[in-house]
Image 1 (spheres, helix red, strand yellow):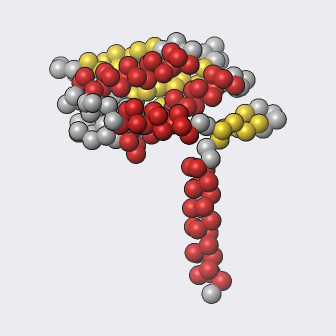
Image 2 (cartoon, one colour):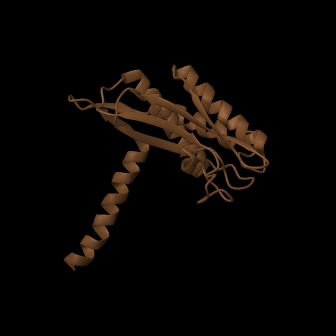
Length: 176
């Protein structure tokens, strides 16, 4: 009986913790372990802006990909970042990863990324747009609080992570 109860209770506790983390996203910085909360209204605004744009963000709609890239670039520039582009192409299309770096002089590097493309004509809110929203909010918080970290962080908005480029040499994260 105790084993059955534990098998039910442990996953339930895990789900409650996950729910709390989703509802109250935070970042912890520094020796003082100060807690910094994400702005849920900004997260929502980014998801809506990307998922509800007039054209899908897919290879079949290159104008939609460009519009999404422009949105991300503009948001990073508003935050005060210098945005670098990593262009690449196939025979028919031009793509670009967008990159910003925090503490670029540090030798060790961590890459934090999200992809802004979608598979087909779908909004991609629950994966692609929400990942980019989290990326944008993370960079806003890093820029605002400027933690002194022992490493560089490259934040990358990847293109072409969905089929038919998924697991191929032109997948944005592979190119990076």
